Image (tube, rainbow, N blue to C red; front, side, top):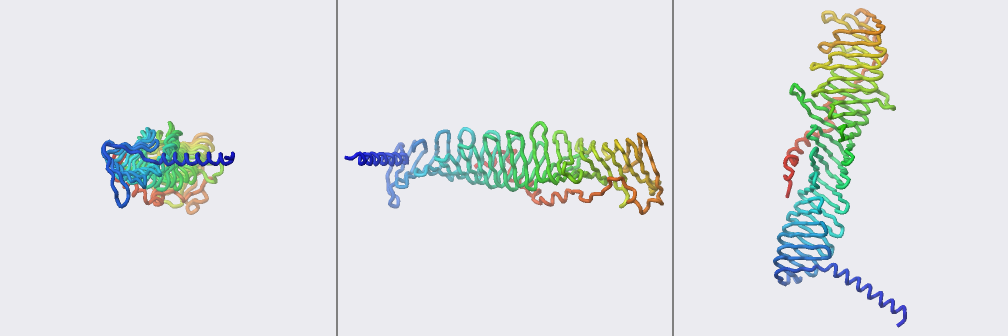
Length: 477
Protein backbone atom coordinates (compact mmCIF):
# COMPACT_ATOMS: atom_id res chain seq x y z
CA UNK A 1 0.00 0.00 0.00
CA UNK A 2 1.35 3.36 -0.94
CA UNK A 3 1.83 6.14 1.63
CA UNK A 4 -0.97 8.19 0.01
CA UNK A 5 -3.40 5.24 0.12
CA UNK A 6 -2.56 4.71 3.80
CA UNK A 7 -3.39 8.33 4.68
CA UNK A 8 -6.66 8.07 2.75
CA UNK A 9 -7.68 4.99 4.72
CA UNK A 10 -6.78 6.67 8.02
CA UNK A 11 -8.76 9.75 7.02
CA UNK A 12 -11.83 7.64 6.16
CA UNK A 13 -11.66 5.89 9.53
CA UNK A 14 -11.37 9.24 11.34
CA UNK A 15 -14.39 10.65 9.48
CA UNK A 16 -16.38 7.50 10.14
CA UNK A 17 -15.49 7.67 13.84
CA UNK A 18 -16.49 11.31 14.00
CA UNK A 19 -19.83 10.54 12.33
CA UNK A 20 -20.47 7.67 14.76
CA UNK A 21 -19.61 9.95 17.71
CA UNK A 22 -22.03 12.57 16.44
CA UNK A 23 -24.72 9.94 15.93
CA UNK A 24 -24.12 8.53 19.43
CA UNK A 25 -24.42 12.03 20.84
CA UNK A 26 -27.86 12.34 19.23
CA UNK A 27 -29.06 9.03 20.64
CA UNK A 28 -31.57 9.24 23.47
CA UNK A 29 -30.93 6.71 26.25
CA UNK A 30 -34.05 5.80 28.17
CA UNK A 31 -34.70 3.50 31.13
CA UNK A 32 -37.61 2.91 33.54
CA UNK A 33 -39.48 0.30 35.57
CA UNK A 34 -41.23 -1.24 32.56
CA UNK A 35 -41.01 -0.97 28.77
CA UNK A 36 -43.60 -1.69 26.08
CA UNK A 37 -43.05 -1.67 22.33
CA UNK A 38 -45.72 -1.08 19.71
CA UNK A 39 -46.41 0.31 16.25
CA UNK A 40 -48.41 3.52 15.69
CA UNK A 41 -49.20 4.38 12.06
CA UNK A 42 -46.27 2.25 10.95
CA UNK A 43 -43.83 3.91 13.36
CA UNK A 44 -41.95 2.06 16.09
CA UNK A 45 -42.86 3.42 19.51
CA UNK A 46 -41.63 2.55 22.99
CA UNK A 47 -43.51 3.33 26.18
CA UNK A 48 -41.59 3.40 29.43
CA UNK A 49 -43.45 3.55 32.76
CA UNK A 50 -42.26 4.36 36.29
CA UNK A 51 -39.14 6.21 37.42
CA UNK A 52 -38.24 7.12 33.87
CA UNK A 53 -34.70 8.45 33.30
CA UNK A 54 -33.64 9.87 29.93
CA UNK A 55 -30.12 10.95 29.02
CA UNK A 56 -28.65 12.64 25.97
CA UNK A 57 -25.22 14.11 26.54
CA UNK A 58 -25.46 16.64 29.36
CA UNK A 59 -29.27 16.64 29.19
CA UNK A 60 -31.04 14.55 31.81
CA UNK A 61 -34.82 14.08 32.09
CA UNK A 62 -36.95 12.34 34.69
CA UNK A 63 -40.71 11.76 34.54
CA UNK A 64 -43.45 9.23 35.35
CA UNK A 65 -44.01 8.06 31.78
CA UNK A 66 -42.30 8.49 28.42
CA UNK A 67 -43.39 7.70 24.86
CA UNK A 68 -40.37 7.42 22.54
CA UNK A 69 -40.75 7.77 18.76
CA UNK A 70 -37.64 5.96 17.54
CA UNK A 71 -37.41 7.10 13.92
CA UNK A 72 -37.98 10.73 14.86
CA UNK A 73 -35.71 10.56 17.91
CA UNK A 74 -38.39 12.32 19.96
CA UNK A 75 -39.93 11.62 23.37
CA UNK A 76 -43.26 12.66 24.86
CA UNK A 77 -42.85 13.30 28.58
CA UNK A 78 -45.76 12.75 30.99
CA UNK A 79 -46.09 13.41 34.73
CA UNK A 80 -43.68 15.23 37.08
CA UNK A 81 -41.33 16.11 34.24
CA UNK A 82 -37.92 17.50 35.29
CA UNK A 83 -35.37 18.42 32.60
CA UNK A 84 -31.84 19.45 33.64
CA UNK A 85 -28.63 20.60 31.99
CA UNK A 86 -25.88 22.02 34.21
CA UNK A 87 -27.66 24.63 36.38
CA UNK A 88 -30.79 24.68 34.18
CA UNK A 89 -33.84 23.00 35.73
CA UNK A 90 -37.14 22.85 33.81
CA UNK A 91 -40.32 21.48 35.35
CA UNK A 92 -43.72 20.75 33.78
CA UNK A 93 -46.49 18.17 33.91
CA UNK A 94 -46.34 17.26 30.23
CA UNK A 95 -43.99 18.08 27.39
CA UNK A 96 -41.79 16.93 24.53
CA UNK A 97 -38.07 16.49 23.97
CA UNK A 98 -36.62 16.54 20.42
CA UNK A 99 -33.31 14.65 20.36
CA UNK A 100 -32.06 15.76 16.95
CA UNK A 101 -32.28 19.46 17.82
CA UNK A 102 -32.01 19.21 21.62
CA UNK A 103 -35.15 21.26 22.17
CA UNK A 104 -37.78 20.74 24.88
CA UNK A 105 -41.34 22.04 24.66
CA UNK A 106 -44.38 22.21 26.92
CA UNK A 107 -47.81 23.77 26.68
CA UNK A 108 -49.00 22.59 30.08
CA UNK A 109 -47.41 25.21 32.30
CA UNK A 110 -43.61 25.32 32.39
CA UNK A 111 -41.14 26.55 35.04
CA UNK A 112 -37.41 27.21 34.55
CA UNK A 113 -34.68 28.08 37.06
CA UNK A 114 -30.93 28.54 36.56
CA UNK A 115 -29.79 29.55 40.04
CA UNK A 116 -30.38 33.23 39.33
CA UNK A 117 -33.90 33.56 37.90
CA UNK A 118 -37.28 31.85 37.99
CA UNK A 119 -39.17 31.85 34.73
CA UNK A 120 -42.61 30.40 34.13
CA UNK A 121 -45.42 30.59 31.58
CA UNK A 122 -48.23 28.54 30.10
CA UNK A 123 -46.06 27.46 27.15
CA UNK A 124 -42.35 27.34 26.51
CA UNK A 125 -39.40 26.07 24.46
CA UNK A 126 -35.86 25.53 25.68
CA UNK A 127 -32.93 25.27 23.24
CA UNK A 128 -30.19 23.33 25.06
CA UNK A 129 -27.36 23.90 22.57
CA UNK A 130 -27.98 27.66 22.64
CA UNK A 131 -28.99 27.79 26.31
CA UNK A 132 -31.92 29.92 25.25
CA UNK A 133 -35.57 29.78 26.29
CA UNK A 134 -38.67 31.12 24.57
CA UNK A 135 -41.78 31.27 26.75
CA UNK A 136 -45.20 32.65 25.84
CA UNK A 137 -48.64 33.27 27.34
CA UNK A 138 -48.74 34.63 30.91
CA UNK A 139 -44.96 34.85 31.24
CA UNK A 140 -43.42 35.77 34.60
CA UNK A 141 -39.73 36.16 35.41
CA UNK A 142 -38.34 36.78 38.91
CA UNK A 143 -34.65 37.61 39.49
CA UNK A 144 -34.64 38.03 43.26
CA UNK A 145 -35.35 41.76 43.10
CA UNK A 146 -38.00 42.41 40.48
CA UNK A 147 -40.85 40.67 38.68
CA UNK A 148 -41.19 40.89 34.90
CA UNK A 149 -44.49 40.03 33.21
CA UNK A 150 -45.11 39.81 29.46
CA UNK A 151 -46.93 37.93 26.72
CA UNK A 152 -43.70 36.54 25.22
CA UNK A 153 -40.14 36.37 26.51
CA UNK A 154 -36.80 35.08 25.26
CA UNK A 155 -34.14 34.48 27.91
CA UNK A 156 -30.45 34.00 27.08
CA UNK A 157 -28.83 32.17 29.99
CA UNK A 158 -25.20 32.83 29.05
CA UNK A 159 -25.85 36.56 28.59
CA UNK A 160 -28.34 36.88 31.48
CA UNK A 161 -30.46 38.80 29.01
CA UNK A 162 -34.26 38.95 28.69
CA UNK A 163 -36.20 40.17 25.66
CA UNK A 164 -39.87 40.63 26.56
CA UNK A 165 -42.65 41.56 24.12
CA UNK A 166 -46.32 42.33 24.62
CA UNK A 167 -47.89 44.02 27.69
CA UNK A 168 -44.54 44.14 29.46
CA UNK A 169 -44.43 45.04 33.13
CA UNK A 170 -41.43 45.24 35.46
CA UNK A 171 -42.23 45.59 39.14
CA UNK A 172 -39.67 46.20 41.89
CA UNK A 173 -39.75 47.61 45.42
CA UNK A 174 -40.05 51.28 44.40
CA UNK A 175 -41.43 51.52 40.87
CA UNK A 176 -43.39 49.81 38.12
CA UNK A 177 -42.50 50.00 34.42
CA UNK A 178 -44.83 49.23 31.51
CA UNK A 179 -43.90 49.04 27.82
CA UNK A 180 -44.77 47.25 24.61
CA UNK A 181 -41.32 45.62 24.63
CA UNK A 182 -38.31 45.59 26.91
CA UNK A 183 -34.72 44.30 26.95
CA UNK A 184 -33.19 43.63 30.38
CA UNK A 185 -29.64 42.64 31.34
CA UNK A 186 -29.62 41.00 34.75
CA UNK A 187 -25.90 41.51 35.56
CA UNK A 188 -25.69 45.21 34.69
CA UNK A 189 -29.31 46.02 35.68
CA UNK A 190 -29.77 47.82 32.35
CA UNK A 191 -33.31 47.94 30.93
CA UNK A 192 -34.36 49.31 27.54
CA UNK A 193 -38.10 49.85 27.03
CA UNK A 194 -39.85 50.72 23.78
CA UNK A 195 -43.27 52.17 22.86
CA UNK A 196 -46.00 53.21 25.30
CA UNK A 197 -43.50 53.42 28.14
CA UNK A 198 -45.05 54.24 31.53
CA UNK A 199 -43.14 54.43 34.79
CA UNK A 200 -44.97 54.67 38.11
CA UNK A 201 -43.24 55.50 41.37
CA UNK A 202 -45.72 54.85 44.17
CA UNK A 203 -43.48 56.39 46.82
CA UNK A 204 -43.32 59.77 45.03
CA UNK A 205 -46.75 59.49 43.33
CA UNK A 206 -44.91 60.09 40.07
CA UNK A 207 -45.76 58.85 36.57
CA UNK A 208 -43.49 59.25 33.53
CA UNK A 209 -44.68 58.59 29.97
CA UNK A 210 -42.63 58.36 26.77
CA UNK A 211 -41.65 56.33 23.71
CA UNK A 212 -38.23 55.04 24.82
CA UNK A 213 -36.74 54.24 28.24
CA UNK A 214 -33.08 53.66 29.06
CA UNK A 215 -32.61 52.61 32.68
CA UNK A 216 -29.08 52.07 34.02
CA UNK A 217 -29.88 50.51 37.38
CA UNK A 218 -26.39 50.29 38.90
CA UNK A 219 -25.76 53.96 38.08
CA UNK A 220 -29.12 55.05 39.56
CA UNK A 221 -29.77 56.84 36.29
CA UNK A 222 -32.50 56.58 33.68
CA UNK A 223 -33.79 58.65 30.79
CA UNK A 224 -37.01 58.79 28.79
CA UNK A 225 -37.36 60.38 25.36
CA UNK A 226 -39.87 60.47 22.54
CA UNK A 227 -42.53 62.93 23.77
CA UNK A 228 -41.86 62.36 27.48
CA UNK A 229 -44.34 63.63 30.05
CA UNK A 230 -44.21 63.65 33.85
CA UNK A 231 -47.38 63.64 35.96
CA UNK A 232 -47.34 63.89 39.75
CA UNK A 233 -50.59 63.95 41.70
CA UNK A 234 -50.58 65.46 45.19
CA UNK A 235 -53.12 66.95 47.55
CA UNK A 236 -52.78 70.37 49.14
CA UNK A 237 -53.12 71.08 52.86
CA UNK A 238 -56.69 72.14 52.02
CA UNK A 239 -57.47 68.68 50.67
CA UNK A 240 -57.57 69.67 46.98
CA UNK A 241 -55.78 67.71 44.25
CA UNK A 242 -52.69 69.48 42.90
CA UNK A 243 -51.18 67.91 39.79
CA UNK A 244 -47.71 68.67 38.47
CA UNK A 245 -47.26 68.16 34.70
CA UNK A 246 -43.89 68.49 32.93
CA UNK A 247 -43.19 67.96 29.23
CA UNK A 248 -39.86 68.18 27.39
CA UNK A 249 -37.79 66.48 24.69
CA UNK A 250 -35.74 64.54 27.25
CA UNK A 251 -36.36 63.45 30.85
CA UNK A 252 -33.48 62.23 33.02
CA UNK A 253 -33.92 60.74 36.47
CA UNK A 254 -31.20 60.40 39.10
CA UNK A 255 -32.39 57.97 41.74
CA UNK A 256 -29.51 58.71 44.09
CA UNK A 257 -29.40 60.91 47.18
CA UNK A 258 -30.42 63.93 45.07
CA UNK A 259 -33.65 62.29 43.82
CA UNK A 260 -33.38 64.64 40.85
CA UNK A 261 -35.45 64.84 37.65
CA UNK A 262 -33.97 66.86 34.78
CA UNK A 263 -36.12 68.06 31.87
CA UNK A 264 -34.30 69.34 28.77
CA UNK A 265 -35.37 71.19 25.61
CA UNK A 266 -38.76 72.89 25.19
CA UNK A 267 -39.61 72.35 28.84
CA UNK A 268 -43.17 73.14 29.91
CA UNK A 269 -44.26 72.94 33.55
CA UNK A 270 -47.76 73.39 34.96
CA UNK A 271 -48.84 73.07 38.58
CA UNK A 272 -52.05 74.72 39.77
CA UNK A 273 -51.84 78.41 38.87
CA UNK A 274 -48.10 78.07 38.22
CA UNK A 275 -46.67 77.56 34.71
CA UNK A 276 -43.19 77.75 33.23
CA UNK A 277 -41.52 77.69 29.82
CA UNK A 278 -37.75 77.15 29.61
CA UNK A 279 -34.97 75.11 27.99
CA UNK A 280 -33.88 73.17 31.09
CA UNK A 281 -35.40 72.50 34.49
CA UNK A 282 -34.32 70.56 37.58
CA UNK A 283 -36.92 69.05 39.88
CA UNK A 284 -35.71 67.82 43.27
CA UNK A 285 -38.34 65.43 44.57
CA UNK A 286 -37.16 65.20 48.19
CA UNK A 287 -36.81 68.96 48.62
CA UNK A 288 -39.82 69.74 46.39
CA UNK A 289 -37.76 72.32 44.57
CA UNK A 290 -37.70 73.44 40.92
CA UNK A 291 -34.76 75.21 39.26
CA UNK A 292 -34.56 76.63 35.74
CA UNK A 293 -31.63 78.24 33.97
CA UNK A 294 -30.99 80.18 30.80
CA UNK A 295 -28.65 78.30 28.49
CA UNK A 296 -25.81 79.98 26.64
CA UNK A 297 -27.60 79.60 23.29
CA UNK A 298 -31.07 80.54 24.59
CA UNK A 299 -32.65 83.61 23.03
CA UNK A 300 -35.30 83.83 25.73
CA UNK A 301 -35.02 83.65 29.52
CA UNK A 302 -37.02 81.11 31.52
CA UNK A 303 -40.57 82.48 31.72
CA UNK A 304 -42.84 81.79 34.68
CA UNK A 305 -46.52 82.59 35.16
CA UNK A 306 -48.29 82.61 38.52
CA UNK A 307 -51.94 83.60 38.33
CA UNK A 308 -51.91 86.93 36.43
CA UNK A 309 -48.20 87.54 37.04
CA UNK A 310 -45.40 86.92 34.54
CA UNK A 311 -41.84 86.46 35.87
CA UNK A 312 -38.54 86.15 34.01
CA UNK A 313 -34.86 85.80 34.90
CA UNK A 314 -31.67 84.04 33.86
CA UNK A 315 -31.94 81.66 36.84
CA UNK A 316 -35.08 80.86 38.81
CA UNK A 317 -35.26 78.85 42.05
CA UNK A 318 -38.70 77.76 43.22
CA UNK A 319 -39.28 76.26 46.67
CA UNK A 320 -42.51 74.44 47.55
CA UNK A 321 -43.87 73.70 51.02
CA UNK A 322 -46.73 71.31 51.69
CA UNK A 323 -47.56 71.38 48.00
CA UNK A 324 -47.93 75.15 47.66
CA UNK A 325 -45.54 77.91 46.63
CA UNK A 326 -43.34 79.04 49.52
CA UNK A 327 -40.45 81.06 48.10
CA UNK A 328 -39.06 82.07 44.70
CA UNK A 329 -35.67 83.54 43.89
CA UNK A 330 -35.06 85.13 40.47
CA UNK A 331 -31.40 85.87 39.75
CA UNK A 332 -29.92 88.09 36.98
CA UNK A 333 -32.01 90.26 34.67
CA UNK A 334 -35.09 89.64 36.80
CA UNK A 335 -38.49 91.12 36.03
CA UNK A 336 -42.08 90.78 37.19
CA UNK A 337 -45.09 91.94 35.20
CA UNK A 338 -48.57 91.72 36.70
CA UNK A 339 -51.79 92.48 34.89
CA UNK A 340 -53.77 95.15 36.73
CA UNK A 341 -57.23 93.98 37.75
CA UNK A 342 -60.11 94.84 35.44
CA UNK A 343 -57.67 96.05 32.77
CA UNK A 344 -56.34 94.64 29.52
CA UNK A 345 -53.64 97.23 28.87
CA UNK A 346 -52.21 98.09 32.30
CA UNK A 347 -49.43 96.17 34.01
CA UNK A 348 -47.56 96.65 37.27
CA UNK A 349 -43.88 96.14 36.51
CA UNK A 350 -40.59 95.76 38.35
CA UNK A 351 -37.07 94.81 37.28
CA UNK A 352 -33.74 94.37 39.04
CA UNK A 353 -30.64 92.23 39.29
CA UNK A 354 -32.39 89.96 41.80
CA UNK A 355 -36.01 89.55 42.90
CA UNK A 356 -37.32 87.41 45.76
CA UNK A 357 -40.99 86.46 46.22
CA UNK A 358 -42.50 85.21 49.48
CA UNK A 359 -45.82 83.36 49.48
CA UNK A 360 -48.40 82.70 52.16
CA UNK A 361 -51.38 80.38 52.27
CA UNK A 362 -53.45 82.80 50.20
CA UNK A 363 -50.81 83.69 47.60
CA UNK A 364 -48.07 86.29 47.23
CA UNK A 365 -47.31 88.19 50.45
CA UNK A 366 -44.35 90.38 49.54
CA UNK A 367 -41.61 90.92 46.98
CA UNK A 368 -38.02 92.12 47.47
CA UNK A 369 -35.97 93.54 44.60
CA UNK A 370 -32.24 94.37 44.64
CA UNK A 371 -29.88 96.14 42.21
CA UNK A 372 -30.92 98.90 39.79
CA UNK A 373 -34.58 98.52 40.66
CA UNK A 374 -37.09 100.04 38.25
CA UNK A 375 -40.81 99.86 38.93
CA UNK A 376 -44.13 101.07 37.57
CA UNK A 377 -47.30 100.67 39.64
CA UNK A 378 -50.81 101.83 38.83
CA UNK A 379 -52.64 103.69 41.58
CA UNK A 380 -56.29 103.44 42.71
CA UNK A 381 -58.49 105.62 44.83
CA UNK A 382 -61.72 104.05 46.05
CA UNK A 383 -61.26 101.36 43.40
CA UNK A 384 -61.02 103.97 40.65
CA UNK A 385 -57.85 104.36 38.48
CA UNK A 386 -55.70 107.22 39.73
CA UNK A 387 -52.54 107.39 37.58
CA UNK A 388 -49.25 105.53 38.14
CA UNK A 389 -46.08 105.76 40.17
CA UNK A 390 -42.77 105.36 38.33
CA UNK A 391 -39.72 104.88 40.54
CA UNK A 392 -36.10 103.76 40.74
CA UNK A 393 -33.93 102.70 43.70
CA UNK A 394 -31.23 100.30 44.81
CA UNK A 395 -33.69 98.15 46.74
CA UNK A 396 -37.46 97.85 47.02
CA UNK A 397 -40.02 95.88 49.03
CA UNK A 398 -43.63 95.47 47.85
CA UNK A 399 -46.48 94.18 50.01
CA UNK A 400 -49.56 92.53 48.53
CA UNK A 401 -53.16 92.16 49.61
CA UNK A 402 -55.87 90.43 47.60
CA UNK A 403 -53.30 89.84 44.81
CA UNK A 404 -52.64 93.58 44.35
CA UNK A 405 -49.89 95.90 45.61
CA UNK A 406 -50.86 97.43 48.95
CA UNK A 407 -47.58 99.15 49.93
CA UNK A 408 -44.21 99.96 48.32
CA UNK A 409 -41.00 100.81 50.17
CA UNK A 410 -37.90 102.08 48.36
CA UNK A 411 -34.33 102.11 49.70
CA UNK A 412 -31.06 103.55 48.38
CA UNK A 413 -31.35 106.77 46.35
CA UNK A 414 -35.07 106.45 45.64
CA UNK A 415 -36.60 108.55 42.86
CA UNK A 416 -40.34 108.69 42.24
CA UNK A 417 -42.48 110.31 39.58
CA UNK A 418 -46.24 110.42 39.74
CA UNK A 419 -48.19 110.52 36.47
CA UNK A 420 -51.86 111.52 36.81
CA UNK A 421 -54.67 109.55 35.24
CA UNK A 422 -55.49 112.10 32.54
CA UNK A 423 -51.88 111.90 31.23
CA UNK A 424 -51.64 108.09 30.95
CA UNK A 425 -55.14 107.03 29.91
CA UNK A 426 -54.87 105.51 26.44
CA UNK A 427 -51.08 105.85 26.49
CA UNK A 428 -50.24 102.90 28.79
CA UNK A 429 -47.72 101.48 26.28
CA UNK A 430 -45.54 104.54 26.83
CA UNK A 431 -45.05 103.60 30.47
CA UNK A 432 -43.05 100.38 30.56
CA UNK A 433 -39.72 99.20 31.94
CA UNK A 434 -36.96 98.53 29.32
CA UNK A 435 -37.34 94.75 29.56
CA UNK A 436 -41.14 94.83 29.23
CA UNK A 437 -42.54 92.03 27.04
CA UNK A 438 -45.72 89.99 27.38
CA UNK A 439 -45.45 86.33 26.40
CA UNK A 440 -48.67 84.69 25.21
CA UNK A 441 -47.41 81.10 24.95
CA UNK A 442 -48.27 80.14 28.52
CA UNK A 443 -48.49 76.34 28.85
CA UNK A 444 -51.75 74.86 30.08
CA UNK A 445 -52.44 71.50 31.69
CA UNK A 446 -55.23 70.84 29.22
CA UNK A 447 -52.92 71.31 26.22
CA UNK A 448 -50.14 69.20 27.71
CA UNK A 449 -52.45 66.32 28.53
CA UNK A 450 -54.31 66.55 25.22
CA UNK A 451 -51.14 65.32 23.47
CA UNK A 452 -51.34 62.23 25.69
CA UNK A 453 -55.00 61.34 25.51
CA UNK A 454 -54.19 57.75 26.47
CA UNK A 455 -52.77 58.70 29.88
CA UNK A 456 -56.07 58.31 31.74
CA UNK A 457 -56.72 55.08 29.84
CA UNK A 458 -53.35 53.67 30.88
CA UNK A 459 -53.70 54.83 34.48
CA UNK A 460 -56.97 52.91 34.79
CA UNK A 461 -55.89 49.89 32.72
CA UNK A 462 -52.55 49.50 34.47
CA UNK A 463 -54.13 49.54 37.92
CA UNK A 464 -56.94 47.14 36.98
CA UNK A 465 -55.03 44.65 34.82
CA UNK A 466 -51.62 44.69 36.52
CA UNK A 467 -52.09 44.74 40.27
CA UNK A 468 -48.87 42.84 40.92
CA UNK A 469 -47.57 45.59 43.20
CA UNK A 470 -49.94 44.34 45.86
CA UNK A 471 -50.14 40.76 44.63
CA UNK A 472 -46.99 39.81 42.67
CA UNK A 473 -48.23 36.23 42.07
CA UNK A 474 -51.43 37.34 40.37
CA UNK A 475 -50.34 36.26 36.90
CA UNK A 476 -48.66 33.04 37.94
CA UNK A 477 -49.79 30.29 35.55
